[in-house]
Image 1 (cartoon, helix red, strand yellow):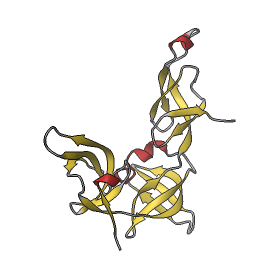
Image 2 (image 1 turned 90 degrees about the vertical axis):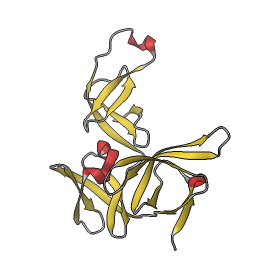
Image 3 (image 1 turned 30 degrees about the vertical axis):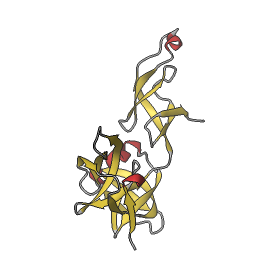
Image 4 (image 1 turned 180 degrees about the vertical axis):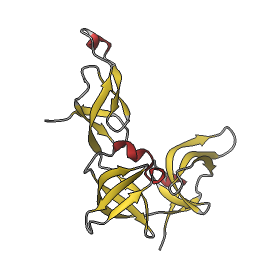
Amino acid sequence: MAQVADTTDFYVGLKFRWQDGIWEIVEYDHHKMGRGGAVVRTKLRNVETGSIVENSFKPGEKFERIIYEEKPAQYSYKDGDDYVFMDLATYDQMTISPQVLGDAAKYLVDNLEINLEVFEGKIMGIELPKSVTLKVVETAPSFKGDTVSGGGKPATLETGLVVTVPVFIEPGEDIVVDTRTGNYLERAKK
């Protein structure tokens, strides 16, 4: 039996069937209009094509919620534009396109263990660990007395991801990044 979700169940990352496709919520906002009723404004990503659309739904609209089967896998390497993973149960290699991965590709480092999200035999995406350790490859140098500002500075990481880090972080250091928010968490423990 299919699980049903309505607009009150929306959260970032929820996947549901809509308009002959499977969509993931990227952003949503409950919006109350003056005399009229409320609407739920969303930004949705088509899981199969990667295309992004914006749409408003009436409160209480119902959708078939997509529940994935999870398969443990490990990121192996990049092959051209595609990413190659190894199924940890069968040791089979699978290739996943950047459209299916979306922003998750910015957190992939060699041997990272993830869960493949499989629906009706097709890989629909991956579930990352809550945080990953990445190497800083480029950031502005820090200057003596810089700590007074209390702000941060942009740092480019080994995967191309750019995050704001404290001023004391230097190129070559490993840092821990939250994969849900893309924020710096701490220096990696040695």
